[in-house]
Image (cartoon, rainbow, N blue to C red; front, top):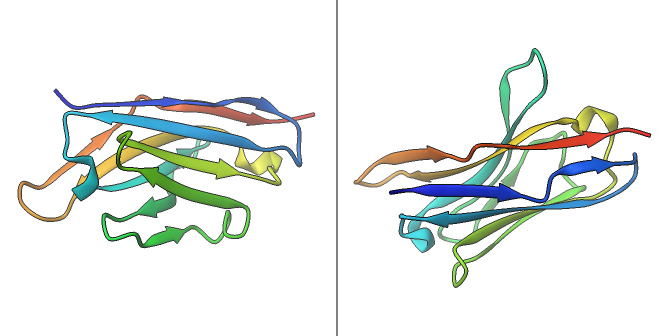
Length: 118
């Protein structure tokens, strides 16, 4: 059974920081592309950042320079460090795991709420 369990969300003031964590089980973590999407109320789910098995990372323009995705293959965990948070970063953040080689899969976590407000 595959599980992706996010943690680290919460309420933070503008300009503050948060680190989200996503612990994965049931997949070969080191081979998976891991990443984060977010969804604000009334909006579509948008990509935030990805980390491939080869070590490449990619960021949405909206968070580039303010966020860092990292992974610990020994702990089967991916992180998203977010700094200089803005109210427009408020959303539910979802972790995902994807394999682009057989066996193909995409799995999602349950989401963690991030609220940026004073």
